Amino acid sequence: MASTQLTDEKAIVTSGARPGVTLAAVSVVQFMVSLDLSVVNVGLPEIGSGLGFSEVGLTWVIHAYALTFGGLLLLGGKIADRYGHKRVMLFGLGLFGLASLVGGLAQAPGQLVAARAAQGIGAAALAPAALALLASTFPGGRERVKAFGVWSAVNASGGAVGVLAGGLLTQYAGWQWVMYINLPMAALALALAWRGIAADRPAARRGRPDVLGAVLATAGAALLVFGVVRTDRYPWSSATTLGTLALAVVLLVAFVYVEKTTSRDPLIRLGLFANRSVAGANAYTLLFGGAMASALYFVSLYLQRVLSGSPARTGVEFLPFALGVVLGSTLAVKLGYRFAPRTILICGGLLAAAGFAWFGLMRAEGTFLVDVLGPSIVSSVGIGLCLAPAVSIATGGVAPGEAGVASGVLNSTRQIGASLGLAALGTAAADRTGRSVTPQALSDGYALGMTAGAVILAVAVLIAVVVLPRPQRPGTDKAGVG
Image (cartoon, rainbow, N blue to C red; front, side, top):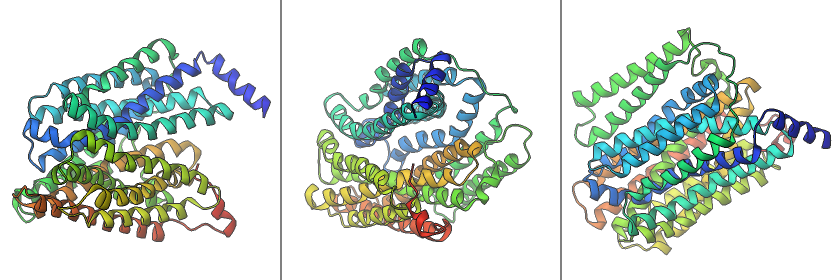
């Protein structure tokens, strides 16, 4: 053990890396990306009223980020491998920070949506490059375990801090600060990475990155979301909706064709999905991501628009949900020494579905203690239980050389699922609410969205039961989630 640790430390030193600075920079990056996902949700009602978003149009503040982030994540990883992780991380940080500044200065809905899309592009370059730098700086041994432990803790704490910071900033400084808050973090990470991280050598080039495939996948997913969202104005049977959805399908089919025939380095080896673990975990995560994004959206609006809570109070009331995710993630690691990831994934999905169904009972005359606190704890612990097992299943059944790709596919699936799920459930909720803005009409719409989320999670659990392979023998059921 000692000799292994000494070898790992020697490898770090001879590479020219400064492990502490690299860990600090990557931690700041992950905290910023994680915080951004939650800090905006609490500010949505103020953003909507401040810039004049419609009820359905407001969802594009989430869609724009999720679609570009998820759609370009694999391309970002390929580019980082090709041109150097430090260089691509610096580019991503600069773009993310600039887009945050532009978003805070936005004066119209389209300007903010464009800035959020640019943030997603920056994050798609930033996130895989930062994680790759962490992995290469800490190649193995106890130092690697500690480094990834810090990374996981920062990832979870970013979401928890985000909900509180979002409320406080929105109420006392203005919604613009849910965007501006990224600027000091991006500047700090840039300073740490610029001087403290050694330039890394790009990987051997196997062909140019498949930019066309990334564009087709992102455009197809965006049109699919756009078509669903627009059903509030154009019925499902209208030529506009059918034409938009048909074009989305054409683009996605073209993406599959390009991946099969391209002479460039493809984003995805399609044969990867022949593996039941990969296919099942991604199908589960697609549905799971949609339900989770919808929960954050509906509960934030319910607390502020129905229960008349202030943004700061909403941030505090969201803390049990955020901390429940942290608790569930911790439990997943502990339970992983006794049960298979598949078992934990199924149990976590059922628990989350129960919490969502409980949320579906929310009332116009409700209270935080009766209508929000209980389902927040139940659903968030279930969500936390699902995170690590999904990654373990999606990456554990593939060759070591494809584990990184499988992880990237899973992250892309989660982001795209979040956008698609929010589009479908947000439109259904808006249809139930109609033009009314009374607490009763709004709560009816949000309750419908949460109930539909519970059904989606139940379908995800069914997929896990049917598609994911069972442990081969009782002893296998003790495989960990890590």
